[in-house]
Image (cartoon, rainbow, N blue to C red; front, side, top):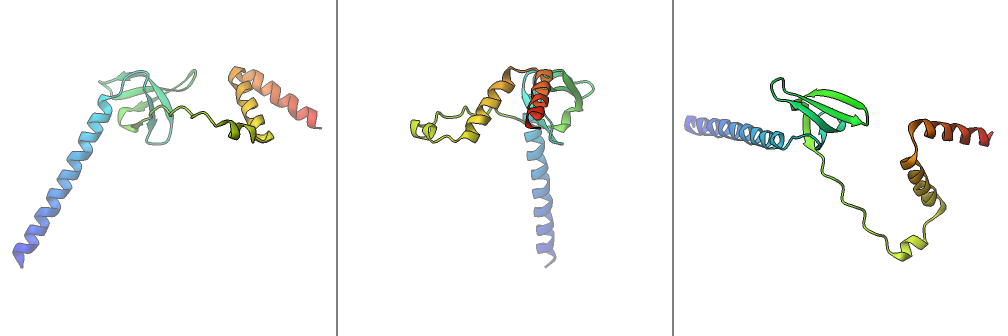
Length: 132
């Protein structure tokens, strides 16, 4: 009976060390792929692009949005974000059935792509005044 208990304990310890080793290998593989320009996600949910890295102090500078930088610990970066696959072209029938709401959303996206933040605020404020 004691032999079975020791065997189970030994198996448990072996599995625990094996899992830790796999986790460390995955983390090392992930961190080897870090370089400036890579899109990443942190453990607390921030998405950004790596601007620079300091290996001595284990710091990574992320650009969260144009002009907004954040410095995080290297281990806080937990995932490399793959670029989204380009949307496939819709068949002609699907385009013909587009309703006004989807058309409006597409127009807003086109406008938003060309506007500066100040222009967007001005446009939204002006739209609110028209409704009154």
